[in-house]
Amino acid sequence: MRSRLLFAAAALLEVRELAFARRDEPVFGPLDFDLDGGEIGLIEGDNGSGKTTLLRVLAGLLRASSGTAR
Image 1 (cartoon, rainbow, N blue to C red):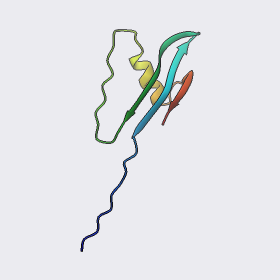
Image 2 (cartoon, one colour; image 1 turned 90 degrees about the horizontal axis):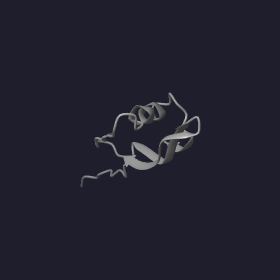
Image 3 (tube, one colour; image 1 turned 180 degrees about the vertical axis):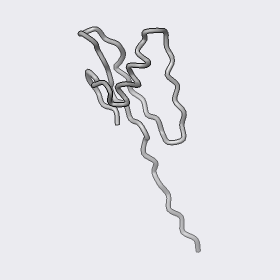
Image 4 (spheres, helix red, strand yellow; image 1 turned 135 degrees about the horizontal axis):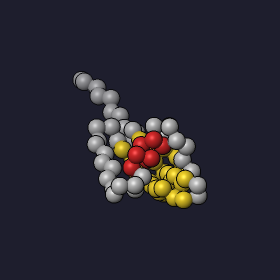
């Protein structure tokens, strides 16, 4: 008899109430989302809407004003 090991995959990225403000002016957020292994995410928005800032926060280059990203 073969045995199988099943995994409950945890989210690759968990974002909860993530927000960023510059000089008390909100740039984005609060955001909530999960990105699981094998999924492809899309960030879209107008110029100046905070897409690059979000990526910098997720990469640890900027500190979020509030919330968590793991």
